[in-house]
Image (cartoon, rainbow, N blue to C red; front, side, top):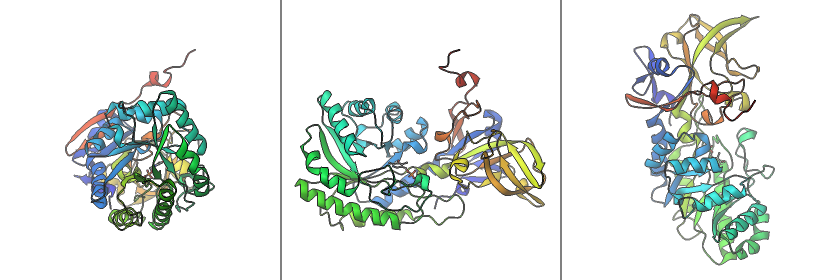
Length: 429
Ligand SMILES: *Cc1c(COP(=O)(O)O)cnc(C)c1O
């Protein structure tokens, strides 16, 4: 289990990211600031790779969870492929030279332009488009035909499985917009096989995010294994790969999370030697949060302390625009003081809120900090590496914060803080 506290520890009373003082980073780059631990990024990736041995398996990092190009470059150099959901993410992959054979393109609404970019990427194109509707298959066929190519596709199967997570990040139910139902796949199968400019290579699934138990995945893997057997019979040919999506949960509070080795075993049971499919397939997984989530923290200065009625507030200089998860999903993030002394009694109980003009701009409720904490002190919001910076926006005309990557006692800026001119870039009076 990867915990933020393995990478973010107090030394001489000050929070450190690996070997670097968070106060030093604050001093140099200002507040608020995102900080990532390199070893926290690499460890889960390596654990996944180990757990999938000896399969021909590729973890394709879900770029949308954290798309900074320094992080993509790091993960690529550690053997990850990429799972993308837009042409913009493909562009990022190109900047760090991720090989096309290690890129899968998911998403319910690909445009013709994005499909073309996928086909032309790295001259030979990406590994596969995970198609999410019958209409999309038609469109990919048309685009591929117009440039005289054949497009590799995987059908994203909607297994109608409840991932038992927050409804906004649940994607594997029949009522969700994602994937294609089994009956729809089967009724269009002959048509798909006849298309001249798409080549059916795989089946993909992704049932949701922050999944805390393996049982929904077990159900989804079982249905997928069955579907592959049926399809191979119908097609009279082998399916080359299966893409099992992402979704592994991480510890934000004290949740019990899926064990990576048990996850690997489950995959091997359904798609390895023991599988009823009867031949080897390439296995792709699309981990996002499990790699990036606990690598990152958002550090923010306390601006003011105030009291309204019985409620005590710590107003910090990070807002919901910098980290939207608590406002959007009512998600919990642990918040710790940068100076350890402020986690000591006597306590007060605080609402940790940002400056944005919305009451949902709240990072945590009834959090205990020392009565002594006050303006100029700072706090770290933990587990902010996934869907943190990538979901940040400029609401209230707030420039995006900088990002810093730490490795041991080294650190470097991997994205500059925006300034006011960035706010109006492209605008015209
Ligand atoms: C978001 C997403 C992922 C990553 O999900 P995590 O929960 O971050 O692992 C993987 N695959 C697809 C298709 C996605 O949309």
